[in-house]
Length: 270
Image (cartoon, rainbow, N blue to C red; front, side):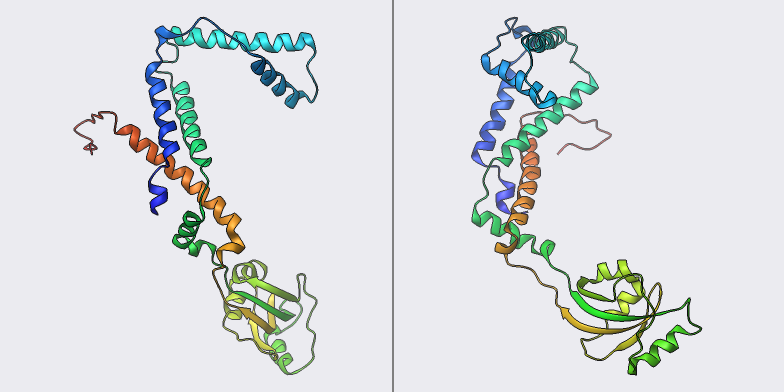
C-alpha cells in the first residue's frame, strides 16, 4: 500500500483524538438533566418530517414531533444513568459501527491531490486494464436442422451460403472474450481467439448452438488507459481505499493506548 494511504492526514488524527478524549471525559455521573432545544434543532426535526411526508407539519404535529424528541432524549439519558447500555451486545455493536462510520467520514472529506491520485493509479493500474476486444461476423449452421452442420459449414467457406437464421446477432463489434463466451459459449470463444483478422471466412468453429464460419474484422489489443480518461473512476476507488485504510490506522493508534492482556492459551499478544 502506498505511503499516503499508510499515514493518516493531520486533521484525521486530530479529529480521531478528539473523539477519544471526549469519550473519556463523559461518565454516567455527569449526565446532564438539562435538555435545551435550539431553533436549529426544531428546524432539523421539521425537515426530517418534510422529507418523509412531503409537506409541512401543522403546529400540533410539530409540537408532537418535538415532544417525541424530548421523550427520546429523556429515556436515552436515564438509560445511561441506570447503566442500561453497559454490556448490551446490540448497543455495543451500534456504537462500534457508529465510531467506524465517523472515522471513515472524517477520512472521506480529505481531498486527494494529483500526486496521490497518480501514485494510487500506478500501484493499481492492472485493475483498470481494458481487455482485448474482437469484431467479427459469423454464419450459423444449425446442428438441429442439418444432418452434418460441420460439413456444411466447411463447404460454405468457399461459397456465398448464408447459413441458418440465428437467434442472436450475426455481427459483433468490440466485444471481449468474456462477452463472447456469454453469447456463444466457451468453445466458440476459445477457437475465435486463435484466429487472425482476415477478409476470408475462417473455421468452422463450434458453439453451444451448432457450427459457424467466421470473418474476423479487427482485434483490439488489451491496454491500460491514461489516467485523465478514467480519473473519476480512479478517484472514487482511491477514496474507498483511503476510507478503509484510515479506519485501520485509527484503530492501530487507539489500540496503542490500551494494555491488551490475552489468555496465555491464545498466544495473541503482539
